[in-house]
Image 1 (tube, rainbow, N blue to C red):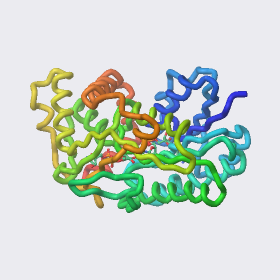
Image 2 (tube, rainbow, N blue to C red; image 1 turned 135 degrees about the vertical axis):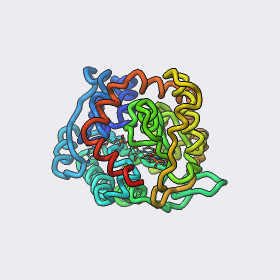
Image 3 (spheres, protein in one colour; image 1 turned 90 degrees about the horizontal axis):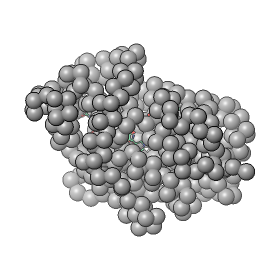
Length: 349
Ligand code: NAD
Ligand code: DAU
């Protein structure tokens, strides 16, 4: 009999890449994509797998304990890969409660449902988390799995709380679990509220490029497909109860990344070199803006043999090409509610 794996948030950016990998590589599993289809979820992201026999979509909200319990009773999952979340730091600053409801209460609802109906012996609950739970770094050092939690934004505080609940269910109820904390992802299907797709969208529309503060904050960028490959390795081979850091060993200051993007976009859309850079506009900084993230992923590399498969130059070009070849996707997701969001977030900065 095939094993049921519930992937939450499978219609989102990273989730759609994880669903694609699991549906294509594991015909022996039935993959249930459980997603509420918020502004960030889009079934267009999964057009290439939607007709596969081992793929099922269930529209459900993880905040709704009863609905989640009923779905888990129906599928009796072998495993859960939990990605559904409110994921944007700026939105968490405007509306922290929404982040508590989805990221904390939603996660606890899933844990309760897995405890009641999931395979508590052979299966596992995988929580996909973020490096932001560790807080911020100065110019040196990297986050390891032993770095104490010190979240600074309502988003990272909610993810830290949900990490703690997953570990608490392991200790208290012996729930089999693994957890990973990953750095910034980039790639196709990334919602254009996040730095890279927002800048691509603004460059093509000749709009200002809003760089927060002085642009000297540092992020460690990983190609999203390599995150999905790490999730595959950890889900199947990670040690029960363990945490793994995932990162690209690829640090960029925001301003350098935006300038590199401008240069590639100028080349690809036939603008004179230096033209898009003129759109860069320094705006009011994000409140509580973490200065630097950097990940030590040696545990994952040494124990499970994972390493990034796509060099940044290659992944970055591929990503830009995807947005230029899928401008309808960008137009679709930036019509409607996005306009109001953009005005609220940037008009008075
Ligand atoms: P995203 O915002 O693109 O997608 C989130 C998905 O969750 C969407 O499909 C949305 O519809 C769904 N969702 C939201 N609220 C829901 C609810 N109440 N019930 C059911 N579904 C709901 O997010 P992402 O960037 O793909 O991130 C996925 C996960 O990975 C998150 O848990 C995030 O914290 C984590 N993460 C993201 C990054 C990154 O760089 N994007 C890095 C590390 C970890
Ligand atoms: O580190 C992992 C995290 O990466 C994930 O957990 C989050 O879900 C994900 O959104 C991402 O968080 P960041 O806050 O780092 O990503 P974002 O794309 O929002 O911002 C990246 C950097 O760019 C950050 O320093 C803020 C800056 N920025 C962002 C936007 C949207 C700007 O300068 N201008 C902008 O308009």
